[in-house]
Length: 212
Image 1 (tube, rainbow, N blue to C red):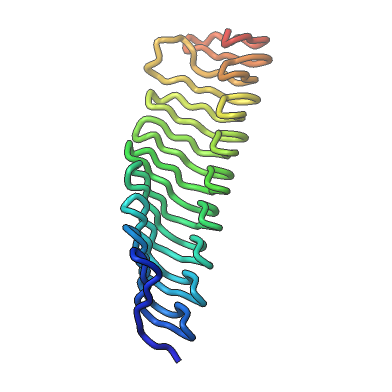
Image 2 (tube, rainbow, N blue to C red):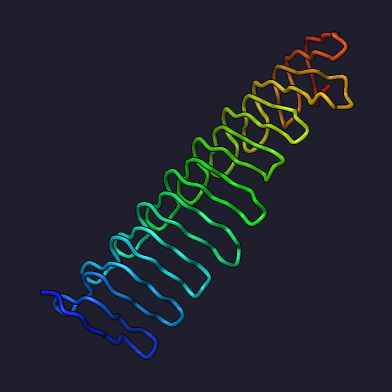
């Protein structure tokens, strides 16, 4: 049966809580230096619900599996002022989640191996929004980018850049005569076959190079 006790590991580490056959089992507290864990143990490992404060630098509250963050949880990197709530796997951000930074930037979507991978939406404060596909933290594949001035790009991205087939609708307040461009992009600019429609009503259809 379970007993309650305190076990000293060394001068700065001890466990206090439920024990079974001299092993941490059930609910307990583990102190190691400036780090503290409060939660459940199975056979000496953190398993189930718990909260970990690591030297006041990393705070985690959520599910554990054999000492690793696994399942649903919340983590805050105190010095960086970055917060994440969502799914974890092997102590990495993995699955659906929401990441927020000090500057108010926010990503909501799919993570894989600590990086944006799959469908997601990124908000740069109140200035820009991207909704689409990510690969290794970069915009890659189909997506839609809405800028602060009201201009909108919808189409293909590669390695964080507009590349492939897409459509750029220019802001109404833009000083340029452009209404929209539809066609091929390369390195963020109109390159290849495309069509430019001007605010004046003029239309040019043909080959473009570096936006012209």
